[in-house]
Length: 167
Image (tube, rainbow, N blue to C red; front, side):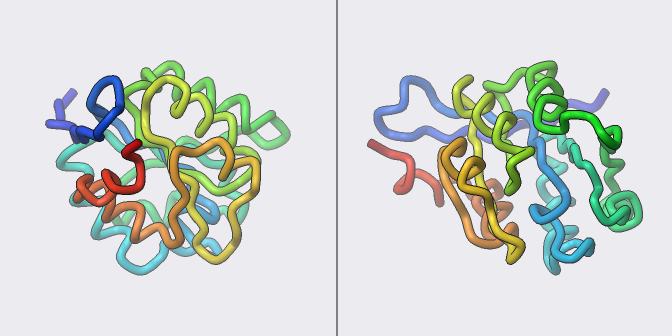
């Protein structure tokens, strides 16, 4: 397996610098709008892949994730229909080591993922791409960002989040 350099963010008054080795993201409503990747996302994910592992974990509500993410290229982890997607997403992150994750999500089924990452010392980002962000997801995140492009740009230039997260 190829190792990636990771992203380190030193934030004043945090116990330790954030060390991000993986991004775990939802697809529907987070990376996409109406089932299509938001313009600019594929380009940013390709850049981000040089720095970190990227995992897309999704219920794939519209059935478009595989086709859309092939442009990056990324293969999403599609969750089983009828299962508790919130628990499956949280468990997925816990297996990877949530303290080294930047998690992105917008729905109620992303809230446990975001909370697990935040509570472990990782970076949890709630995103509204035009399909909304649930209150539960927002309350589980370290920060909330309008538009996935802004969230990915923040990861590509992590100094952008220092002012927001410092104490």
